[in-house]
Length: 85
View 1 (cartoon, rainbow, N blue to C red):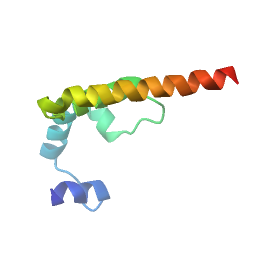
View 2: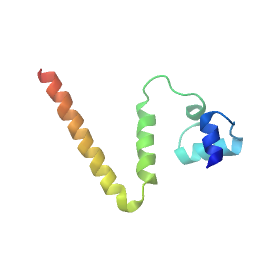
View 3: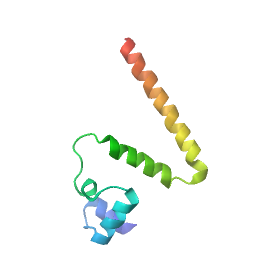
View 4: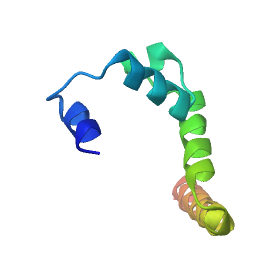
């Protein structure tokens, strides 16, 4: 865990083995990991949501999904209210 933390802080560089494991775990391409996207990438966002859902314990997935659905409805309500003003 400390090793990953040091990589995130920029104190260490990951080995190719670690990079490969991150790519597989996050289900992303090498360029997505090494070159941060400057624009909004909806596909990467969906992959991240999928990863978060998949990594959540099975018994909490329905709770996670319900929470996201509720949040999405609230955001739509707020946005629809703005357009009426």
